[in-house]
Amino acid sequence: MSFKGDFKAFISRGNVVDMAIAVVVGGAFGKIVTAFVQGIIMPAVNLMLPHSEWQEWTLGPLQVGALLGAIVDFLLISLAIFIVLVKGLGSINKLRSNPEAAPSAKTCPYCLETVPFGAKKCKFCASSLVSTEN
Image (cartoon, rainbow, N blue to C red; front, side, top):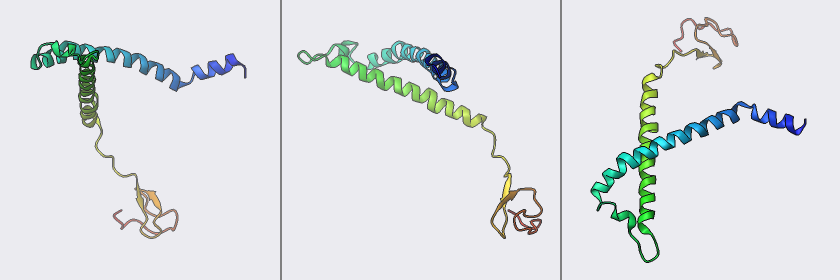
């Protein structure tokens, strides 16, 4: 195949398109989370800490406050993502999930092969399954 054909096959794969969509959506979601942290969470943190002076702390030429600010941002963004995505969507998915489906197969007590749940005879050993409760 030619380079053009190989590239066309690569681009037309579903997982490449899905990955591109995920990157775009992830970027947009990142902007939402960053705005949430900077607009709501960080002002609350600044109320608890001595104004925004802590972000300007230095230790000689080292900007310790900037590092602490980046660490706090990272932890708060991670916490927000964990709460919204892992816990929030996880609980929504649990509510949406269907109750356990009835078993579609059972085990023959004589030959231990799996047979359909409604079977009256085992297709492997021809044993009668009417009286069994598997």
